[in-house]
Length: 478
Image (tube, rainbow, N blue to C red; front, side, top):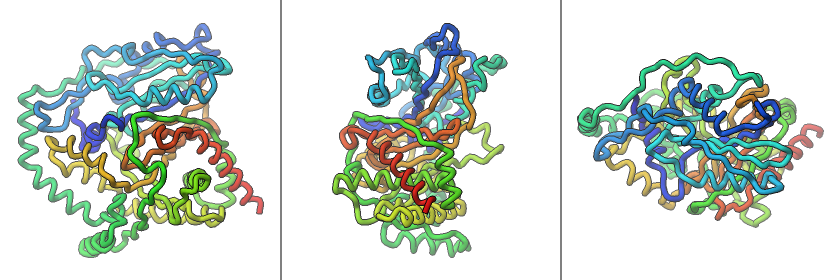
């Protein structure tokens, strides 16, 4: 039995009629090596049933709310867990192209998860061109972060077409405390909450200038530096000050989503990195800056200053947080040099800004996310967070995330995984566009999700990303 962390609960509380904080992945597989040459719902359900215990429980556990909302919910194992109830099967009409698949994934991504069951769903999609099959998997962000998502995938995937043997799970099902125990613990935490809030405010004060939106306010940097000086933390570098300008995709998001997916060559990205310096992530950020710049410029909506990108970062430490299944993430607020017309200057600015933000993040450890998520008492956190989600406050223009993955082929029920495309979250405060990339087997697989009302065709951004890579390759030849 475990309880949702304050960050977990924030993801749960952030859900509204138009914002669903689940993260997903779209796997394209070749079923030629599957038994019978077909991937079935029965095979997927059997795989999950046999391996769910390897996935740190996100596949089997459900929410156990505390009476009257006095405290954060608990996790407990679902006594009626049946993977088959979480898996559906659909077929695309001919010709089964990528655009049709993107539309189907968008519709799947628009629907919330059932909170009475473990917070995940899977869809098996047949009818793709070229005899391919797709598997779409979504999990609520309250139940999983990027690292535990990778661990869950590792539990279900194999290194060869022949599925590996795994030991049977023998752990006792975990149940939430009785209602009286949850209420008692909740009342005690409520009594102590003012003290915890005061401590959180003190711990957050040195890092006010790196909180998206807050850091751009007049005086935030001065307050942060004053507190750092008082605490003798003069080694903390200043955070770059940037306010998110208005763009067409920084409006209230609607219910509908649009999804596009594609890929770039990882070898070509690495060639650019070797020639121009920086890291693979710097190149990815520069590609996104160029693609978004082009998209905005074509519409006459290019702001005169940089955009602000939110870049999620894992706080997990290798070998030290393996048993903790709660969200351990933060976010870096990074200027995105979309205002610079010269490609070389744009790349240099992106690299410089990323270096500064990373050095600042290393010094602060990104603790402000955890501290701020626990400031509100549980009984009022939900309504207030949902109210804040609808506020006309735009601290970030878009989310850009780069997730490193394995550089060798993986298999699902014997089917080779040809590509894996992340599909993440959009919201009013983080922007109506999210670009997430996942490096896999020599490629950079790109998933773009957007609010359909604001960006009806995100495949245009994929085209601009390909052009941006060509532009950087040209720089390496000069």
